[in-house]
Length: 237
Image 1 (spheres, rainbow, N blue to C red):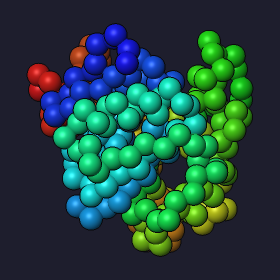
Image 2 (cartoon, rainbow, N blue to C red):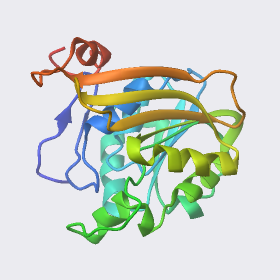
Image 3 (cartoon, rainbow, N blue to C red):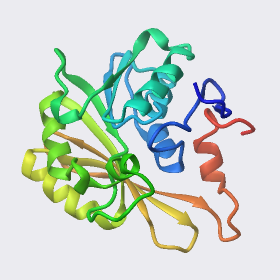
């Protein structure tokens, strides 16, 4: 186990220093935004340190699997799961999601997937593989995997940069995934949005649910919207 200190939330703590991707605002906002049902069996693709499964377990999913291609990330996620109150309802798998085989389908699939369309040099091969879809997990591939693993009435939720959203949604529709909900995220009041949370399903909907979220005000303080949104998770709120 790492000697580094864990990151503390109100109802769980987790180590994130060995994982390719650390605890960050993108995943936290996605985990808080996703709606869950108490009967949901869920899957996290590219779990890293296991943050999303822990957040969704706090929200009340019945059971959650987590997959990551990076061995150290899965080892750290397993430590975090075992230390939590939901240890009996969480399981981590070391696998490329393309090769992941399991005798079930999921009500909910979540992912904080590779962001960048074009490969650029990272400080390690592990981080490159986690961050760049050219390193193995294209948008078409992740959508095909979701269609294979998701129940007919299931939901797929993910976070993406705004500037790749249209390309992703185009690939999604080719595989039979359709946008149901979108949260547009603005980092600082008055600035352009930089992230979107998306929820997709296997059938089109008559109307897409839209909302906008602002993280910081013009003075770079967290907005009341942000503080209220994360009240159930962050210490001190």
